[in-house]
Image (tube, rainbow, N blue to C red):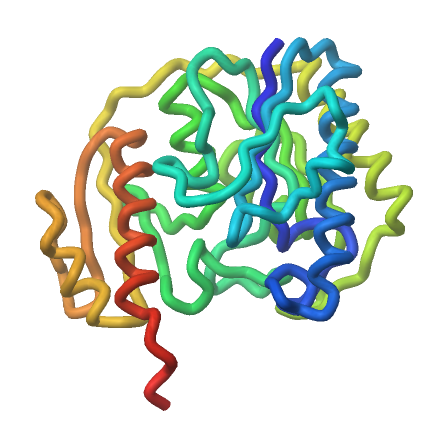
Length: 275
């Protein structure tokens, strides 16, 4: 069994604030250690369930967060950016399951560090007519490869979002959101044991997922009208209003294209705020 782990940071055990998850935050280095240990718990669960290979993709922010010298040596690691497929770089149809560690809820939800890919720059994302965030985008792209999302860890709002997208996902909450930058935490040792057990159990009962080739519509509403204006230069991308763009294609094409959107948006919004 080949297991793919996508590791984000906002939903990691004990982390609640930008200072915890963004360099050069005062607690970022501590956060990197906590992230690595949550991933290690998932790796242990995967191997206990019979995994023959585990690939971990560092999928948060600079994508240089996990500490290789502290990572379980049985795991392979993809680190750094840019990556054409972003949070699912390296995932192929050869994998049997995806595990999401440290995920957060989408923009507009009152969850810990909630957002969709780019902080306040993205207001909303829709797949067809369904509002989504990072969880739904990843789940649908993995499904297009025929690979099920088996388990997810994060705060309770991320877990609820994952289960609403697919009731078969085994979700383990490592904290209960009190506000966007506050949570009641599960004790560290208990959380890691829960992650390991959840991943283990999920991989012993994998759902089947047929590969998908249908055409989907991706719509993104940006905070900045400038981003939408620049994205019109990409063939097949249209504006529906000053801040919203839409395009169609198969899901894997859309996921790759969306990562290009993010790079364009980063370049366009790189100036300090005007006010």
